[in-house]
Image (cartoon, rainbow, N blue to C red):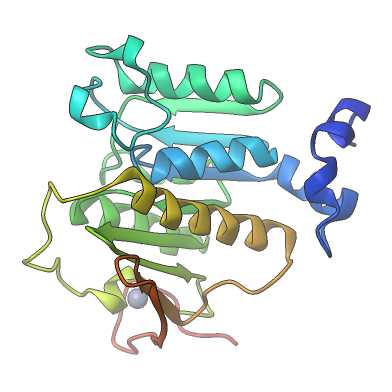
Length: 247
Ligand SMILES: [Zn+2]
């Protein structure tokens, strides 16, 4: 199923233990939604495009501003004032023209979540605000598909992977939006990029079956002190959004 060029392009990652040609074929077949494609999601999308994930659905509204450019690595100076989705699409097509890219100039909401998520196998939540996060979570749980959950603030990052039937969901963790959550926050691209690469590898592990994803574990790190912690988390039995545990 892989072409000779694809075998050559992805050769070094196919050497990863347990991946091989069959793992690369799984990546080629995979469909992943990333929202949004800023400091975190843009780097997630870049890594997944480089790895040859076959279909990327990428949601990000609005026009590019100068203050985006310190971390949103799919955005380039030439696109200032123009739609972010166009910069996202051009950068990813230049990196990997072999994959399908559907860049959507909207953010996720309850209006479009079901439609967009019906097109994919995995959702990666890189949204800054809780209404978007909940809309993605609820649609993913309804469809029984995994959602990789990322967040960052200043030097702190958090990451976990929700797998319906095996873990809880975002509403188990946060039944209500935390009042301290802010639209704007301190961020170096080096910090958002770290959690982004980790989230991209969670998706690669889910797709190929190699390694272990962060099921029922919240990884937190303070990159200011380089302290990493793994905290156990569990499904809330009273949650009505995610399905009961089956394993
Ligand atoms: Zn739940």
